[in-house]
Image (cartoon, rainbow, N blue to C red; front, top):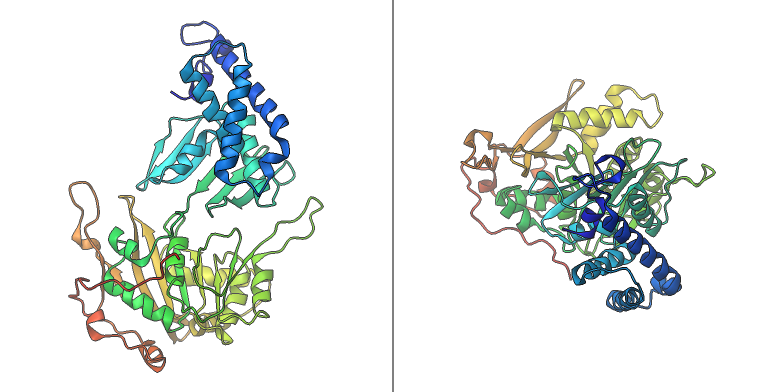
Length: 462
């Protein structure tokens, strides 16, 4: 049991007593000791904690030495195990993120959700479980939130109680505090692997088949405009990152995101990030502002982390004015819904455009939609790869090139047995790819293909 758990023992009992009705004096003493040591350490080390010249190992060694020296002068009687735990907990508070530090270091954990200081959930293999750690109190959780937010130059307070941020490794962070968070603060961290996933990883996970992977590689290299669509937590950003790895090295790529998450390994990548308004409500830079600016930066490819407002219009304009091969994501439940949502987002730009004009822009700009879904077994799968075929009257026509086979059923553990299979339809944009020197083999679209060939080679971390 960690110190954080011991400090919270008996918290549910009235008057701060233990389950047996006795005051948890030892817990309070340990709590006071930890806070006293923490304050003394901050005062003693001061600027050293922010010295960029020190490596992480050197900084941790200095903190541990100072902790041991401070504990040696304490008269509070504690056992050796408790002493080690105090050292671990205080160093995690100073150097890391408190009790959730070990969860962030766990490679099996993909998401950490703090529903207040004493209820922390994690996602493992697509399933939610209650973690065995807690914060001491709301103030403790708030200190960790402030630390995360300050690292990326943002702020969170009563005037701005919502904040999107990121950890140094690129993991996405969302924080909500009082007065919006009842029973909070709330902290949600979606982890990103230190070594990004590659196309062969997605094939191994069953997210897509080998032939579908080769098809998407051809679409990216052939400079088709692709939208990655799906619900929350379906893996859109991960898929966008994998698809972006197919972009050739000799192209100039500009990424636009709310908080930087994409991890591209090409040599010529420029990353832009939005900026919230300052305390006076001025200085905000939106995704739309950044997308407009990218057009003046001579991009070969524009990659927008997510379209969620009027920037969709600027993205479509870019796709229609020579910036082929652009990529973005948006929230939608199926390919048809993604087009409807795109129409709505374009209207949010503030222009009273006719619906037909918007649909003509979409059908002309977008070539392919990749639809993701998180299935009930916790796995994330590509369920549709769909071509935007053109217009018939006022309706945008779609045709599915690959579909997930739900008819295969599930195994004894409830895991879906199906995979992404070709429908037998050859896309119309195959001619456009052929003009760019990319030939799609007929067996790629044969409905009986099983996907036994080797996976396409994605770009590896250097």
